[in-house]
Image (cartoon, rainbow, N blue to C red; front, side, top):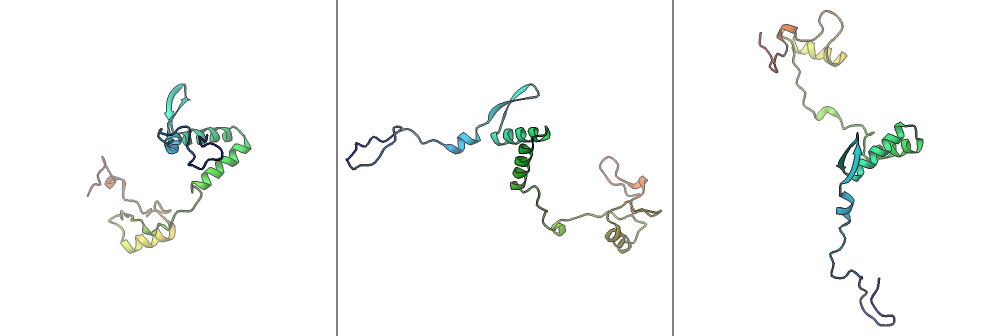
Length: 136
């Protein structure tokens, strides 16, 4: 609402002059109360919206399914991850294997177990026990 009189130059003022401006971000991020499983709890509005759309999509609503897929796409859930070469892996090679032979088998067939008698796994009596590897 302008308080400037018509025909008089001046700065237009809001009717709420002197009050703090609205914090839109705070309003949009305010938790809302939802009932889930018979229990009332606070939830971020975006989470509540996504849960609602997903529930409708599972129920068979095609419009909701399309909207849910679009939200997933915009969140980057369908993008392939970057090359995994930057990750560090630890290979536990059984003592009975030569590392180069084991690695060649790994490159050919992927992680063990492999078909055949030599499955690439550490024997059961030397596997992890209580969170620690045994050295037998």
